[in-house]
Amino acid sequence: MNRRYRYLDLMTIGFVVVLLISNLVGPKICRIGPLRPSAAEFLFPLTYICGDVFTEVYGYGSSRRAIWLGFFAMALLIAMGQVAVSLPPAPEWHGQEAFANVFSVVPRFALASLVAYWCGEFTNSFTLAKLKLLTGGRWLWTRTVGSTLTGQAVDTTVLIVIAFAGTQPPGMLVRMIVSAYLIKVAVEVMATPVTYLVVGWLKRRESADAFDNQTDFNPFRLQGESA
Image 1: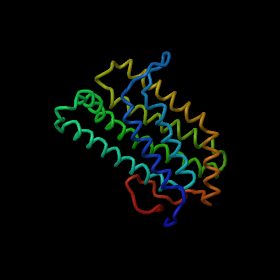
Image 2 (image 1 turned 120 degrees about the vertical axis):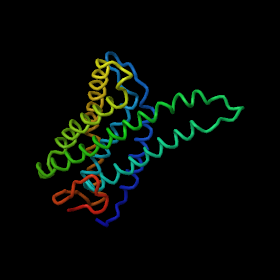
Image 3 (image 1 turned 90 degrees about the vertical axis):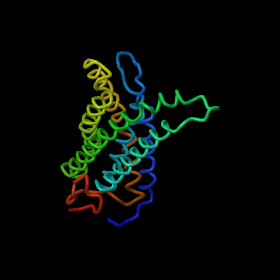
Image 4 (image 1 turned 30 degrees about the horizontal axis):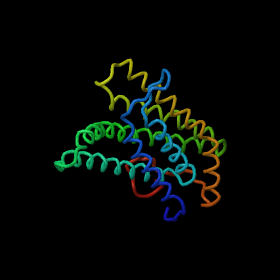
């Protein structure tokens, strides 16, 4: 596909920005009644909604491109966070300890996010693309909800285990996984009407409605859209 789209790059940039912000605020654990979600759970689901839109409107190849761009952006965040912490602070600057406390948490959480996000996003996009073929492009809600159920299950489990194993007891890890999963799924289900509006608007504006009939779903294939 060599076609240029009007809104694809803008949406990709927004996707990467949301991903980076989510990983900066993610280490904080919140208390909402019996639930113990990460602060990222209130923003990170937007990346899955974007992934649904990418795959539904532009195709799996565009979603794959966005996922890899987000992956490399997160890798840069990890590297620069470590460099910034390790650089000697100016004598007149007294924020080094607080700065280090924040960014010393980020590398492990960011690594967990990279792995979980990579696995979860590709699961989400693959599921949506296959469901679109199975439904013949009908019943968008079955694709957005179905891909969310699978993608978020993979993402949440991998994220919590890598990010918090050894720092929290097993019971708390399970509680965190269930809490995060329920919140993520709830957010995306509630956002279904908005997803419908965005998808419909983009299809009309871009004159696009992708069906991945012959797409190579290999996540490592960065060039080309079809087998």
